[in-house]
Image 1 (tube, rainbow, N blue to C red):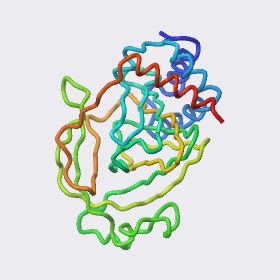
Image 2 (image 1 turned 180 degrees about the vertical axis):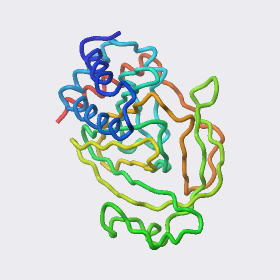
Image 3 (image 1 turned 120 degrees about the vertical axis):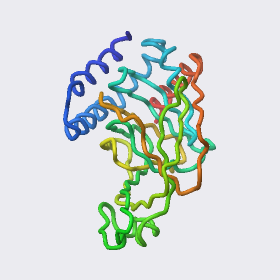
Image 4 (image 1 turned 90 degrees about the vertical axis):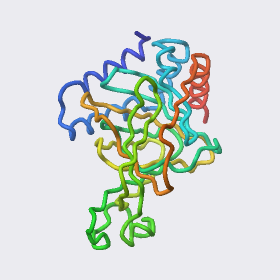
Length: 264
């Protein structure tokens, strides 16, 4: 089952988030949980414990991988279909593909920036035929907003993303064109937390010279069957493979994360 810190994290997730919470309450509870578990001292203790082999490293390694954008997704606590707590380690100059596509999630999420800095953008879909230029911009200043938002949004291709049956690969099904409008631009420094409902369209990226670490939680028993992905950059492949870590690689990554969290 795990050591003291693993069991404490599981207990906090269950006590705070189990049950049929309204989504608004679920988002607020998720925010509070990652804010607490993301404190440097507590996260370091949890990661160090897992790096020593506590929990189920074999199962966690199967669900940990290097994302195509160049950051590591390390599973810390897996509570089945209810909660997935991960550490995201964004490496400077890691050779990723650039900013991620605009997307939403299968369930509510919360993210705490442990060290470094993260940018996020929020979007809304522009209904067909609507005069997008008349709508006000929410969040940030107009100087912070991208130019294509001011003139009515950006043209994108829409996809429905799901997990391929029998594998961990992402399956992308084209769902037609869409136009999106940027509604918020935010910068989150170390110690900051944000939380979003499942349907919120967003994307995040890291622009720091050194590594950035975030604690990321997806939560909720009523998960959507697919997510929506919007890309301005043209069509995607029909499936994007996930390459899981092996146990030695997973434990080594946790050890490196532990060292990183201890560094000035």
